[in-house]
Amino acid sequence: MRIKKRLFIGLLALSLMFITAVLAGSWYLLINHSSLFNRVLLALGFFTLAVLFLLIALGIISLVLMLWQGRSRPLFQHLGLMAVNILFPVALALGKRLGVEAATIKASFIEMNNQLVRLQRLQVAPREILILAPHCLQWSGCPHKITIDVNNCRRCGRCPIDALHALASRYGVRLAVATGGTLARHFVKQYRPRAVVAIACERDLTSGIQDTQPLPVLGVLNLRPHGPCLNTQVNLNQVEQAVQFFLTGRTVPQVQACSEGWVEVTHGS
Image (cartoon, rainbow, N blue to C red; front, top):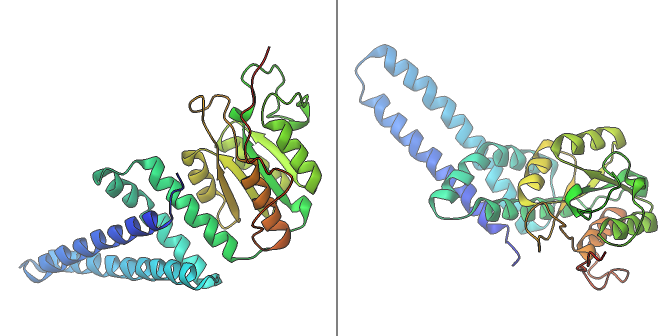
């Protein structure tokens, strides 16, 4: 089931309401407290929160306007990212209170991020695009270590790494496989891409997108028919569409090379 970006926007709005309640409580204490020293402290705290509230409110409004108008503006983008980074932990906590799973909230964040990236309509040279894949896509029984050098893959076809190799070769983009966030950041520093197509679970994609801001990252959630971190799969169609977007600066509705979408790879002996 596709997670819609409106969930994350809604939780951001609830987080803003929470901050509003804190401001209202601070104001009440400010006008009803007799000690001058405490009144000064409360006044400083109140005005600090008020400035923070204003910036966050502008950020959320900027996000909504960009998504509604279908156009990216650098100032709006900056304000929106700032609001997201500040309110993200609050949104997760509120979502938990409301019975919404953290993975669902993070998937909504990824969907919103992807939409904001597409609004930028970037056009990037092939060698400046990096496909960043998780090591759990590799067949668990494979003896070849590909996280140091992806070219160690023997292209046997038992896992999606072979198909990703073929896709990267077809379009002339780079491919790297990481074991986690530290190695992923290392590859980003090493290759210095202008755009990244990242494949991972909700948790790793969310942290990766936030760690690499403002680098544009299109996130593709991996598929876990065998559970997390074991012989995961990926929708190759989505990966190819993301690559084509960065190459052309526009969304390509259909691609031909991976028309089957994703393929369950059988792990034979």
